[in-house]
Each structure stands twice: as C-alpha cells, then as structure tokens.
Image 1 (cartoon, rainbow, N blue to C red):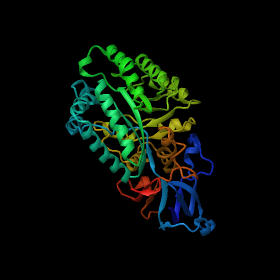
Image 2 (cartoon, rainbow, N blue to C red):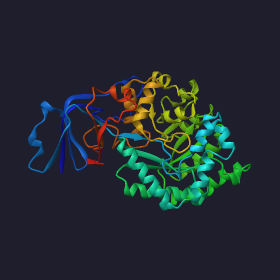
Image 3 (cartoon, rainbow, N blue to C red):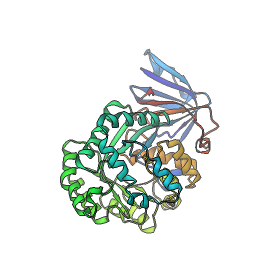
Image 4 (cartoon, rainbow, N blue to C red):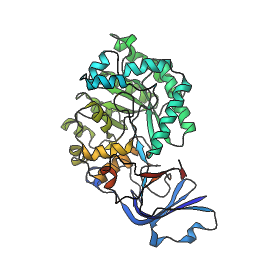
Length: 415
C-alpha cells in the first residue's frame, strides 16, 4: 500500500543525489522543501516535492493512505550510532556519588562504573536482558530514533559477552528499527584480571573475537582506548585481530585524556571515533582526509560534567561531525536524541542545521547506514517523523523540554 503525506509545512533533509556525509561549511546547509508532499511505497521513499508539483495520477488505482501534515515538519528519523542499550539496570547510586563529588575514575576504582554493570549483567538471563532492551528500543523509537548501534561490553567474560551479542541479534529480529551490533569486549578490565591486563587482552584477541566472528554476532569491534583503560598498543593489537576477522573498528577515544585513540582509529580506518572531549590539532589533522567520522556524545559530557568536545573547531577545519546519545546506565542514562539535538546547539554552539546533519546523515554514516537512512531520498527507507505544529526547524532544538513529535514511521509503518 502507498502512503502519501501532503501539505507538509517543511520537508527537511531531502536529497536528490544522496551523499555519504556533510562536512565543514556544508553542515550548515539542510535542503528543505516548503509546502511539500512525500510518497511512500513498499517501505521506501517513492517520490517527494512541492505540493504544486504533485500529480495524483502517480497514486494509480491502488489503495493508499493519506496523511495531512498541515503546519507540521517532516524529517528523517534520528540515527543513534553509539549506545550501550543492552544492560542489566540503572546505577542511580553512582549518580549520588557524582553529586557528592566523586569522579568517573574514582567510582571505577571502587568497583563501580562498568564493573558494576558487568557484575549485574553476568547474573541476568538472556530473556531478562532482551525484555528490558526491547522496552528501551520502544522508548527511543517514540522519541524519533529509527536506527541504533548497540555495543556489548558489560559482560567482560566470554560467555557474558556472547550473551549480550545474542540479545542484540534477537533485537534485530523483533524490532522494526535498524540495529547495528558492536563487540566491545575491551570496555574495561574485569576484576578477576586486576593486575593482569595483558592476559585479558589476550583473552579478547585469542578467544572472544574468533567466537564472535564464527557466530557472526557483530558488525563492528570497539575498544575503550583512554586513560586508565586500554593503551594505544593494546588497542592496536585488538583492532588488528578484529580486522583479520572482518570486523571494522569503532573507537571510544579521548574521553578522559588525549589518549592516541583517534590516531589508532584512523590507522585502522575506523568507521567512527567517539567521545572526543580531548581533541587538539593533532587529532584534527589525523581525521582530515580519512573516512573516519568524529562522533560527539553530548549526553555523557553533560551528565558527567566533562569538557566539551571542540565541535566548532572540527567543523571549521572541514570535518564532518556526528552526534550520538551514548545511552547507558552509568554516564548517559537517556537515549533521547531530541535532547542531544538541543545540547548540540546549547552547549556546542552548533546551528540547528549543523545539529540536524549530525543526528541524521552523519550519524547514519557513523553506523554504516547512510545508503539506507539519514535523509529523505528516493529509494531510501521511509523512516521519518512528523512533528506537531511548530514554527520551523530552529524551534526543534530551542524547545529542549517539549515533546514536539506527533508520529513516527519506520519503513513507512507507524510505530
């Protein structure tokens, strides 16, 4: 069945010739059609344009659904290229510790943080993890997200890491959202390997990666390359092993210090390097000319009180920038990409158009989905949302606390 959305006040982020990303000055441009229509057929974008150009004969004699979007905007759904959505529950006790002044690293040294989540996840059943994660997917879909990357990394032993990745595989089967899976066995060193980090790295390389690849459980491989976690040399070894098993890199880099994570990510043609609170001229120079997407996680910096990634400097240098939620129970307990859009403008001084590119087209690239999602283009998947009546694009990040989404469609179907 065909669906026709008519009288759209503004159809935002349209492309006649699809791009892989928007970079530098291009990020401030988002092509928009006033008083537009959008035609969906078989879950794909079939046509779009100005209402005055619409020819009802294109609908043919088939049954079709018409949606009147008078006064409303239509945008492609958000893509969220960095989350830890599969987990065994919240960590609000650590939230109180943060309020009392403890740092992320201090909490981690006390057995909190990632190790806390790992202990709880090991005890949780696959069914319990699946049920909780499915509910989180429904939550973010209602908030406008149509694609999400989900990492392992709260298992930190072979059986638990595989359990997480199998849950993600099952989520792919039951959810209408586009889901990408990332193996993050090198998220932290588990307690039982304290003082034996090299042995744990060997376990990741020699046991975990081959098993993950054999079951085809992951699309990508990730390492937390940062102060107090994994070194550049260890990251290099892990990424090299992943590459040999067909897993492209995505890197946690430079969240806590200038770690060298950006450079090793570029060396291995990482799809993205994420966090980037500590980025200077060397990191920007490494990224220029690469195929690696710098991805900022405003929710984590907001929640932890971290320095802000230099988004303006990266854009000024000609780089593309993507945004992600980092949805996880410890450092960013929200997957609401509407809020991320607002933080991009409020805290990182990105103009609304730059922020929209960063949560749609560029974010789609950062999870390897730019050919299918991230813009309104003929042939791409018809995943979009319709706003409530709003003044225009700038209102979306401006109204940071408002629920301005009226309806969400994934592959042409309402969710």
